[in-house]
Image 1: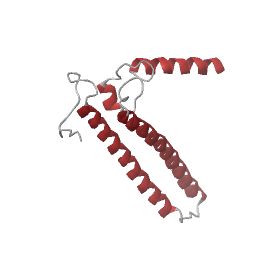
Image 2: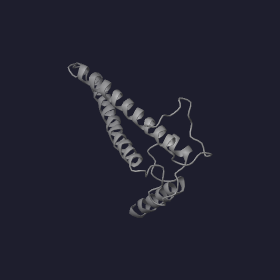
Image 3: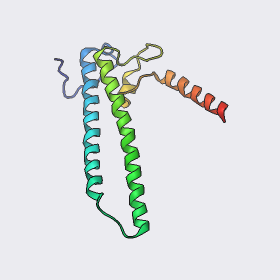
Image 4: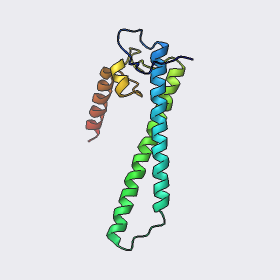
Length: 140
């Protein structure tokens, strides 16, 4: 079991993806996932509590239905994010975490601190987005 000091921040000066750094990112991902699940549970409870409320005013009812639809869409995005977190945790387990899927180069500590589920370096991500734009423009 690797212990991460409470004030630990990964740096470029230490070996990339050493055991302490990997554990730091694992803990960060697990905490993020738990936070999303906790928020989803409270939202679900709110939706169930409000489910019996029937607004007689059609405008109020439409407003509530819009809020519920937006909340469900946000929850769907979070469900997809949980999937990405699980994939990142698996990459940690298999020692593939922190390396670009396309180039096998280090993704970089700063990028992973901001986006711990990142699978591409910034350069590879930009290439990927340019390709998507080009293909999208071709279809229009």
